[in-house]
Amino acid sequence: MARYSDAVCKLCRREGMKLFLKGERCLSPKCAMERRAFPPGIHGKKQTFKRKTSDYGVQLREKQKARRIYGVMERQFRRYFEEANRATGLTGINLLSMLERRLDNVVYRLGFADSRAQARQIVRHGHFEVNGRKTDIPSFQVSIGDVISVRQSAVSKIYFKDRAQLMQSGARIPNWLRLNLAGMSAEVLANPAREDTEIPLNEQLIVEYYSR
Image (cartoon, rainbow, N blue to C red; front, side, top):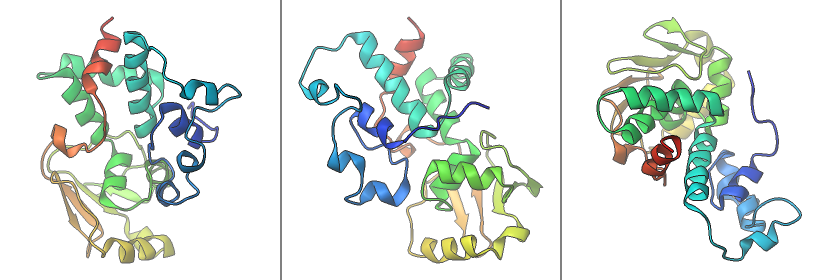
């Protein structure tokens, strides 16, 4: 499966904002956006000057921003859009809901990982189960009533013991999820609403990009 393998800090610099792809590092002075807040490349600094951007360029940047935040490649992202377009309701809201309901994103939003990339890795390693069944597919779509939990074979690992202590500090959990820290599990209470996304995205621009 294709996967972006270059420095992820370049993605933040290209989009001109923090995408929080590296967890705690994004909150520290080491963050690339703190030190070099201009696009990557030899002409990066020249691009910091204001210049007119076409409607297509604005739509493209919004689509790329969404892809990079959730760690989804182009072909898969387009499939999400096509499915969201067929579903009942607003296409943009449906798209964000599908991205939020990815298992790797749920693991990240619950606090089991510092970034979505880290969440994708621990899901791939088979440390989680959904409704009692081992699930190692990061793109797995959770549904209302699903129970996501750390597998018994992984609960005793140092990583999850440390995470449990960090999560006791009371990290903000989305309203559509209910965390059971004692059982290292969570339940999906509802489908995520637009306000639950908490990501500065204009989903209408993404719809316009694919509707050209």
